[in-house]
Image (tube, rainbow, N blue to C red; front, side):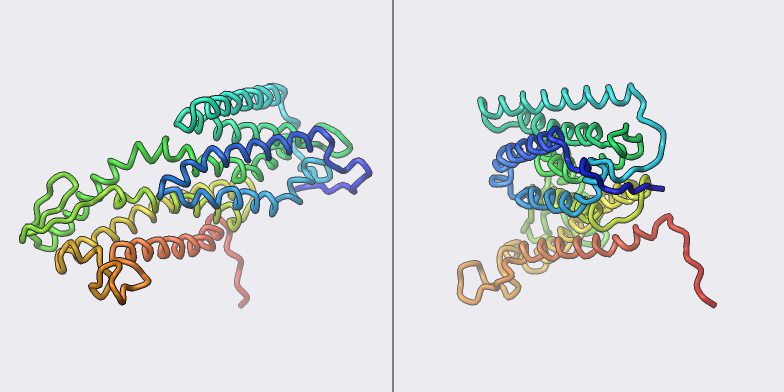
Length: 342
């Protein structure tokens, strides 16, 4: 149950809250500049250019509700926030600001790198969430309830935490699992070929056909590009379209991100399996030609690109369609069925 109070002359963002908002905007701008080096040099992170806009869009969409919490015209009855929790939030805010400052200094002095990017991104996320928690107000400048504070934090999770996908994801996830994904994709695809009675050999990440031709499962085929893009798309779809209050909405959004990763991995396996069978039937060089066998640069080359690129694009489109179809299913998850009329 929530309580709405009538706006008063003081129902505006105070100067401190506005100042903190400008601080976060400046930090987000600096984070964009830092991660631009990743987006512009790593093909797997081209979606990063969308992060500032999507973060701003979600914040704009939720602004009315968040603003009511910040000015105290929207109250959610619950127990008062425990003093140790307030102290912990204050400590987190100072620690996150210090982390961001150290990362910014290292970035300015030493250039781009894993240390500065991690410090800047986590510093921005921690600062945004902690300051939101501390800035929520109760009606008539009273102490905000614990549920109201956590509701404000919930509204800021995507705008603040999405920066962890577009930057640190590279160092924390990409570099750690790319090799394992590459090996597993090779093993699964070769297993499917053997199950189809194809006499193939495997050398490292290269599948060798009976005629001596071979196709290599390169890093681009590991699926990390589709994985990072699908996690970002799933996080955005979950933030905008998944419904419900706490904790239902949070659990649905976590499930959406998990489904995004699983969808990316399964579609990548399917894509690589198709490409390997195509190479087996038409030769490995056919993957660098279009559907009609025309090489790039020759007259009549398809606008859809090579077989390799076309398969990747189809897999990404299929992933987005699957994720969009999961939204109404997840919205129904855990909710009681309404009785139908006789």
